[in-house]
Image 1: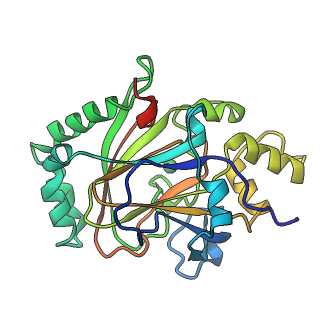
Image 2 (image 1 turned 180 degrees about the vertical axis):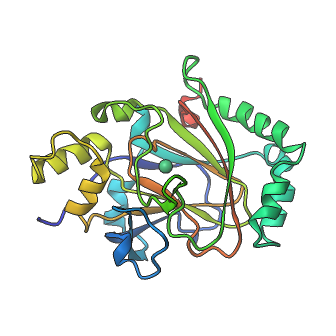
Length: 284
Ligand SMILES: [Fe+2]
C-alpha cells in the first residue's frame, strides 16, 4: 500500500485569539497502530486502534491541509474551539478544583450530582443553543464524563469491558456517504488542565473511497474506520489541545476520533451536547 500523504479534508478553524504564542493547539502522530502493538496497552477491544507515537508539531506545509475557514462548508467538514464564558463555567468550579486535588473518581462523581450542577448543565445548554443552526435538530446529551489521567483514548465499551480506541460515532446512523451532514457536538473541558481530541482529518466519504480503492471487496462499509487504519497505518492522527474552559465543536459522526487524557496529571472532566452547531461567523 503506497503511503498516503496528509490531504485536505476536515479543517480546523481557530477562532480564539492566541495570546500565548508558544501554545501548540495541533500536533500530529506518525500514524496509527493496533492497541496490541501499543506498549502501555490497556484493556482494548478487538480491533482497537490508537495513535502511533511520537507526536510532532506540524510544520507549515503540514498545517496547510489541517486548517481552513469553514465558511460555506458542510457541518461535518470543520471543527473549532470556542471559549466558554466564566459565568457558564461557574457552577462547575468545585468540580474543576477537586479534579486537581484528588485522583478518586468517586469524589468527582459525588460532586457531579450536587444540586447546583443540573442548573449549570441547563445553563451550558442555553449557551450551546447560541451556536445552534437548526430549530429542528434537538440539542441532546448533557452528561458529564469523568476519566482518570493518562488514558491514550477514552471511549469505553461497558458491555464488553474494553476501551474502543479510535472510532466513529453513530448516534444518528446516517449512511456513510451522508456523514458530512450528520449533527456534530460541543464538548467543554471542565477540568483543570489540557485535554485532547484525537482525530483523523478525512471525512467518512473519503475514508470509504480510500478503503474501496485499496480493498474493493469491502463494499458493505461496515467498521469502515477499522478497515482504514488497517490499510493506511501511516496516515497521521491529529491531536487538538483543549484548555480548561474551552469547548470543541466537532463532527464526530464524520471523523475517526477519540478523546485522550494521556499526559495529564489530573482527572479529566467534560460535558457534551450533540446538535447542529455552527461557528461564530454562522450563528444566526
Ligand atoms: Fe466518539
